[in-house]
Length: 191
View 1 (cartoon, rainbow, N blue to C red):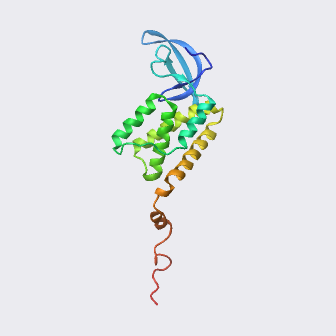
View 2 (cartoon, rainbow, N blue to C red):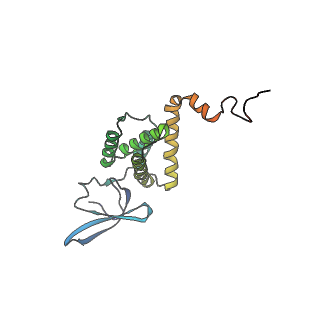
View 3 (cartoon, one colour):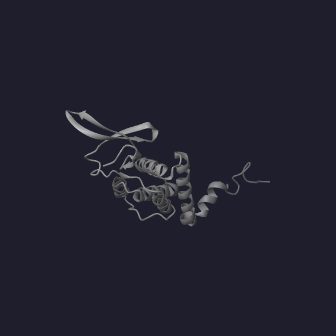
């Protein structure tokens, strides 16, 4: 049982603070609900009797938050090449409510986005996973959303450069930024 003021995580939604515990009559059934205040002034009602079943848990502590940042600093883990299978695997990780699994999804999809882009569905999943990750880290780190978002981006960019910089073909990068011989100015010199 959680109390008013507790900081908790609601899987697939993110972290927030219990604003109240209220009894509501919904469809003729009286039930007790946690009123969870989340970032952006969003409020979510969670039936108290179902909280444990759906995976509601306390937020992580500072030490665990440092481990989450450690996950973001690692190389990506193996993902299925099949888009459908990869999407299902990542969705399972997110549904687990495990912040380390969510950090894994954020890092892996961020790497994939930097390498060759993401489908619309995976972009949406990445944005959702980032929101869930950041909402809990904001509470664990006692920091602002902007600070945590920047820290997450910095960790991912650093690890991407460390593990993937060599994978980026220098030739393709050079061709994108340096014009081909004779392509500059008025064309080739015919004098």
